[in-house]
Image (tube, rainbow, N blue to C red; front, side, top):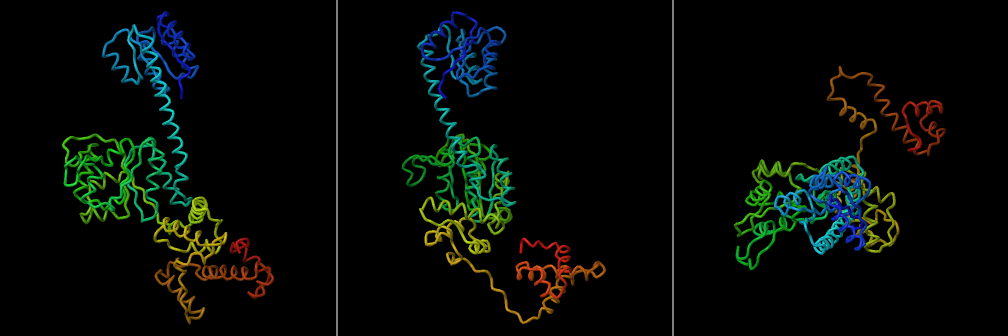
Length: 477
């Protein structure tokens, strides 16, 4: 945003005349208001990049007008002019959001210097806004995390509510489910998007170094501390700090983290002064922290501080409907990053992928697809391209007759029930047996009802009635 249109409000006509002449000469479009109410009317009609307001005016003072402008358009820059060079006026103006102020009589060169500085500030603000917009476009909730299953839809709802706030979030889930992706989605859809997102894996750093990584240290704090180190809390100032595998944090360090969450300040190792920090905490773990609390391996007070908003990410085996979407997404990325020609999977391969339990979750699926796409010479991946997956468990061979199998199934189903609670059992059992039998025969005959009726030994009209009564969908066969 460059400064183009300026609103000047001053009850002295000579001041208005001088300002208009000087500002117009610099290429600005200038509107003049003789009092606060007139300035307010101009403001409602047009968009201004900068306002120059006298403090003392009829009707509305410059400070009252400043307050109104800040409520309506906080991005607009305001310079205050005052005839009283009192600290009270200056402090009040700056507290209300003024960009700068001048005291009468003022030098036009001083005003020009302030406007030049304001131009740079406006350009910087525009760049920050652009970066925030780009980041939000790159990391929208529905693109950062892939999935349309019901469990994922619930997670999206939670993310939509917590992202704009500053509440602490605890993300739980098995390894490879995408906990860091969720944490990033929270950050990039929050007001902190223009600041840093820093991630720290508490399990990957030795306990004796973890404190220094988090809080930093002063020179000479310990052997090898040859210079001051700024920790993650200070580095992430104004942004988000993602503490992964929080369940592996040592107990003594948990106490220090708790203090930071309570006091919003840190002390570097070897230091004595407190340093205020403005950081949003998002933590994650693949462990059961409640069990760790019960075993006294994790502080209960810290658990409740972190668990303000819990988000539990389901394992991939509990959202198999998302596998086709994930496959499409990862293969698109593989084609782009590795320049391979794989276009997708055959139906058999997709069924193969959906049957697998994916103990490594989404991360395992991504790596499996990447490996298959690199090694395959075909455009469509087949089950043969996934030799490392656990095959479908083979059915156990049995010598039991069909009658024995049905008898055992009926016993297992109805034995626990009270006989007095059962009604119309004969029809119910027949209904449950008829439907799969007729469906299988129709599937085998490819929907040929004449042939199916012959195989079943019933009349064709009887078969048609049973198809309707049993609600068999011929399109699905």
